Length: 257
Length: 360
Ligand code: SF4
Ligand code: SF4
Ligand code: SF4
Ligand code: SF4
Ligand code: SF4
Image (cartoon, rainbow over all chains, first blue to last red):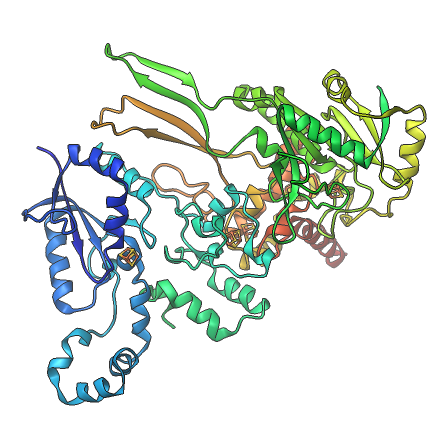
């Protein structure tokens, strides 16, 4: 029997699934080898047990959390797919703002006032904080990035299907940045989160003339204090630095305070 | 050995002529302040900046040991037999504008890769590479310390060694091999009879001392670095280290690599076709010294920092009787948090002196 692979969406743009659909060559090869279930972007069908469950998106409401626990209980491997699932992504910035205030920021003063009196306005915001998948269930593998890297996806699937353990080195973005012979953006008067961020993306942003904003999350050994010092020494304000750390990684425990 | 003099314009035309025939790499200025060895394509495309350029982001030796190099590919035939073939094809190349520090780096890598089991991938590339080196009359910036690290004036391994002379835009070319003789055929130049004298005059114009100097002579460093734990010194540097591996990856004498196996999917999982590649590794990365079962030999950043320093000044010098830091200054220049191996070494030496003083 072919292994069953499933994709589930939570709060996300579904861009990671699209990133996969975009690599048609990999995808078609893969379809020969697995049974694909619950892939909303492609087909729809239900199944009781999954060999690999891919979770896309961050977890906001209690019902989402329950659904996730249920998926976990039916899956052999559970993979967090993309920055939303791995580290909360941009939507987790709302963790630092009171829900009503957030409401006002997005929908304006009137909506904020209405929310106080009309309880039907609330459900969407009735969460205390945006969570990563790992905050709720055990995650076997993380496919980081916004969007995830198709290359890493392939490494993971090939390994799991042939009963091997996939290996994703826990290195800073700088490693791949230097392998690509890039000029460090600090030498061009810009600043970068590469030294404290998870690599694996081939330093794609720096390769293309941008800086790294740590969409793949902060490394477990990230020396945030030293990085903060470095940023301050470049004349960047504390406020701006904090905002930079929070851009993609707000659901991480590390950058809560 | 034959020597010639020539003018800047002639030198340029010669480079372009060589570049028309084969891969020719030369340092090119990038957007910011750095340089990178890039392929020279056509006239006017690249400013020749041989006099002022500071060492490139990656050392030229990396062209002999490219990241992601395919070591071999394999496939299984219908009878189930495996067939292997050589991976990346190796084309002849010329690397020009190689500074003495980097020339020494290449020389040291020649030694390493031919020690014991020969690394044929490296050696084949080396065999097909011509080197045109370039002398320094001033320190390239305040990061370098080539003189104290004994690589300034290093000439071994270059097919042609170029020195700028005192007379403006005038250069001396020393041909050091038969391949150099081949290369120089297309250069418009004059045979030089007083080469030694002209070169000496140019070198006398150098500032003294030339760049930063270790507090302790390099011959004694091995002994000190070997015996001194200097825990406090390494801890101080580790505090601001990101463990990002940049210092390793940009170093001309860091050669550690990891290998990866990859098979093609082709509608099946029987791994009938695939390849083995190798990728630059870095001992400052926390996962570097992790072995099967999860044990890590150097989990602390200070231990990794010490390991790097000992590789350059103790372990490899013991085996090859040469200091394995060329003083190119790359690690200090490119470390985002400003950790410089030159400072670490000096601090270790100073900590020994202080200890001795306090004992007295
Ligand atoms: S990680 Fe990025 S691309 Fe993927 S679902 Fe989240 S927002 Fe979309
Ligand atoms: S540009 Fe960023 S990722 Fe690249 S070396 Fe510099 S700090 Fe590291
Ligand atoms: S380190 Fe020394 S040899 Fe190397 S480029 Fe600088 S001055 Fe020249
Ligand atoms: S480049 Fe600097 S921060 Fe990065 S590992 Fe080396 S010493 Fe540490
Ligand atoms: S340790 Fe630093 S200065 Fe020494 S050779 Fe390596 S990169 Fe150059």
